[in-house]
Length: 160
Image: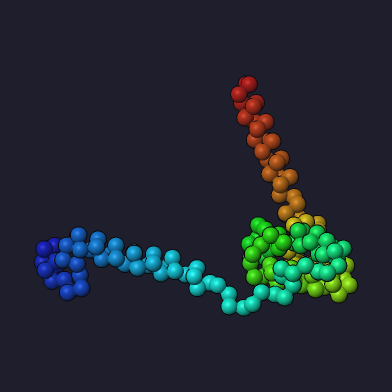
């Protein structure tokens, strides 16, 4: 069967020309882009903010302890921000939890240990050295050694 015979035998939904095919694919792409652009508007949480997320403690010393601790804890949603700087709902919940526990008399170290036990070492910007976190501590040194070795080889080749 020749190409022209195939084109004539095409079903009704097939485009009649290349221009029409491009037009249909452009409309489909525009519809997909519109749906994709509207998705973030649906991501807003309907839950109220945590009770102490943005409220300072009455005792300035305890608030200072809470703020110092919050600056050392990583937001699990944002991952690059401390919970003290993040606007994520989970960071607000964690700020509230830190303030509530410190207000109840726990030390910042106790709160920190509880959060690490619950969320893992990733919640802190200063993870302890252990079997699990050893790659975090050793990888920069290994990469520095490899870079030095490569630079040494490049300088040797240039000289010799």
